[in-house]
Length: 446
Image (cartoon, rainbow, N blue to C red; front, side):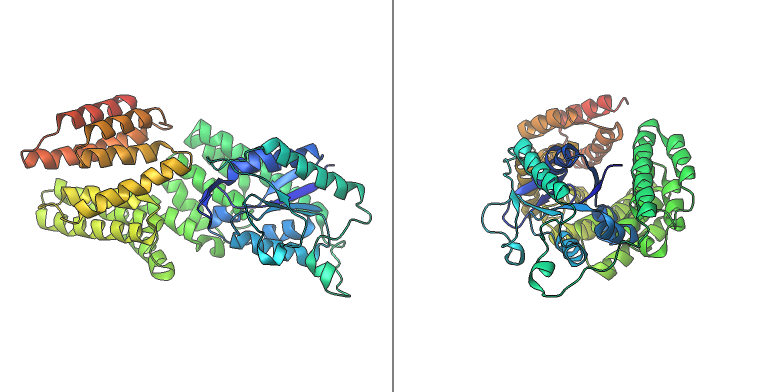
C-alpha cells in the first residue's frame, strides 16, 4: 500500500504580492504530483479553497495522519501557512516545502530547507521536470530514513523537550478508507458532469448522507449540479449539508445563484445580501446579486412597467459597481455595470470614465494569465460599447476559439441584443455589432 502524501497549496490562478500571476493547478499537475508519484507515494491535495477557506475534520486528519506532506509557500498564502503550522506542530519530519518566487523566503521559514522552482511568464513552472525531481529526491530521502528521519519542523528543532502527540493510536486505517473514498467519489462526479443531469443525480445518490460526507466531495457535487444547470439539485444539496459548510461564502453564493435561476428572486436577494452584510462587498457576491437585479429589470421592461424597470436597473448598476470597486482586477461586475449604464435612459454619464478602467483590468488579466472565453467576451462587449469595430471583431475571433459550452456565446449575444435594442431606440444602430451577435448565435447552435 502506497504512503499518502498530503499537498498544501492554493487552487487556481492567483496574483501574488509580487505582482506575478501563478497557475497553482499547473504547478500541482506538472511539478508536485509527478514528483510525489515518482517517489512511489499517493498524492492527496488539500481542498480548503473549494469551500471558501473552511478547515474541516478531513483536513485535520490529513494534516496529522499523512506520513508525508508537500507545502507550496509561494505567495505566502495564509491558509497554507496555517496548515503548515499545524503540520509542524505534530510531525517532526517528512514535510517538503516549495517556493516559486525570487528573493528571500518569509522570515519564519527562511532557515528551513526549501526547494526553489522558477515561474514562467504564464504563471506555470519554467522547469517543471527539475522541480518534480527535487520533490522526489526529498521524499526518497525521507522514506529511506523513515525510522529516524531528520527533523524539518522548527517546533521540534528549537523547542527543547517538545514531544509529538501520540497519533499512533488514531484510526489511520479509517482515515485511509475515507481518503480513498473521496478520490473515487470525485472521479465519479467528474465523469457524471460530462454525461449530464441524470448521471450527476445518480452519483449523488451513491454519496448517502451529505451531512456526513467529506466537505470537499459535497462541494464538488454542488458545483457538478451547477455545471449541468440543475438548479433544483443545487438547492437540494445545500439544504442537506452540514450547517457549518452550508453557511460558508461559496455555498451561499451558489445557493443564491440557483434560487435566482429557479425564479425565486426574493429569496436569492435575501441570501446574497446576507453574505455582503456579513463579509462585505466582493466582486463575486455583488456580481451574483447584480444579476438578480438585472433579471428583474428585464422582466419589468418586458412586462411594460417602465418605472419599476428603471428602479431595478439602477439597483443592478449600483450593485455591479460596488463589486467592481471591491476588486478592480475582476472585470466581470465592471463590464456589467458599464453595459447597463449604456442601456439606461438617458445613458449614465459615469460609463465614459468606467469603460477604460474595465478594459485595462481585463487586458491585464489576459496578459498575465491563461485567458478563457469570458475574458475575450468581455473585451468583445467593451469594444462594442466603445464603438471600436476592430477590437470587437478581434475579441470575437478569440472568444469563439475558446467556447466550452454553447450557453456562453448565447449569453454574450443576448447582451449585444440589449445594446442593439437601446441604440436602435436612439436612432444609432451598429450593423457590424449585429454581425458579431449572429456569429455568436451560430456558434451556440441557434
